[in-house]
Image: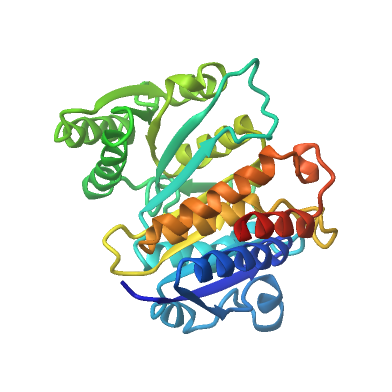
Length: 351
């Protein structure tokens, strides 16, 4: 096993520039304690780079990233640049060039984090989102611009390979947990792609005899996340449905500020990317209010992917202990600053 990993770090925009340094400090300490090192390659890409160059990343940016072990991203987006420019200029090209076809989003209620769930109800769900096709295709366009009869056409693209590989990944996770897999669909209303999704999910999951598949319409599933979260374990979903469901589950768990994600190339032919899901939050950027939990947790997911599960466990235990002890940022009803919370995690890691 290697004792050093090269990580491309892109703080990006807004609070990404606050939570990523917080997370890297925690990652460096836990790596030192477990006898390995993280070599950070700083990439000052994002909206400021776009303002000066007209691009979110350099022409050879993907080539530069291809030589690293992983990518650690803060956030993308600013108020004066259209979201489609920032997202399609940086994050989506990385996902697609590196075949990061799995977007894994764990959501669970954490100790010390107030949840809108009534009573003592808990949520612990993994959303496995197809990450490179589906509803987020590039096929389509706008026609007769500016005219009364202007229209836009957007094509969803579902391939047998794409559905099968995301289902296989989700089924393997479910087999190692409770064996319950929920497939998000809308095959009663979307007549071509969703019945195809259902068919391939069913065929693929049949290779996992210990896994049961529950096909649930997306609207009913959204309600179930809120009303019966304990009935859910692993969810497999298309690009759009997985995106929405994972944010809903994060809100049910208490805050988008604690929600991490991994964009995975499971075959490890290319680097994977790890990021918090909360976005750039320009309204609080620069105030020291940002919650670093999602970034720290995303860092733990990165360590696990790199083959360092013990270090990942220690990092998750550390921020969990800090939350359980009552240290919380403003989004969780506390008063701790980003720096306060980070320092508390560092103290917990030092033991």
